[in-house]
Length: 146
Image 1 (cartoon, rainbow, N blue to C red):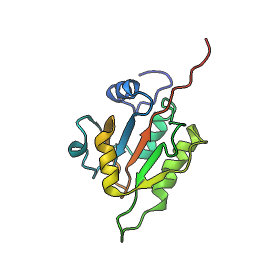
Image 2 (cartoon, rainbow, N blue to C red):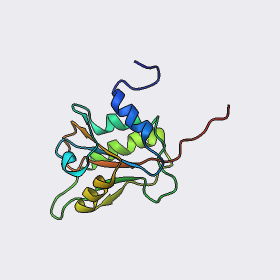
Image 3 (cartoon, rainbow, N blue to C red):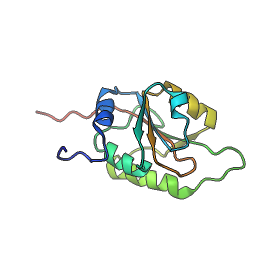
């Protein structure tokens, strides 16, 4: 265990977050997402909910301030409806750590899959909420003076 780092973050996930550079994207995928089909770098976080994982990751991970939408979710397929509580729980976690982040953008399903293919990694969670996937674009880590 490390002081100040959530026990929800595995050593592999911490290493992955550290290896990411600014502009790299990570997908926190729900349990239904085709992660293995979309990306060669997949980590498992079974049993964890995305909102809880956001709360664990975001104290360590700056979101990109140079893009319009550093946080993306999948738009519903025509005829489907969204549960607004899902996005609200994600936004609450984002606001606790990076409150100036622009609104979460929604992108079409197949565009989301393409972003997942290009992402640095996909983290498969135990999230069961429909449309519970989210993409985070890493920003430049703030430097504290010595």
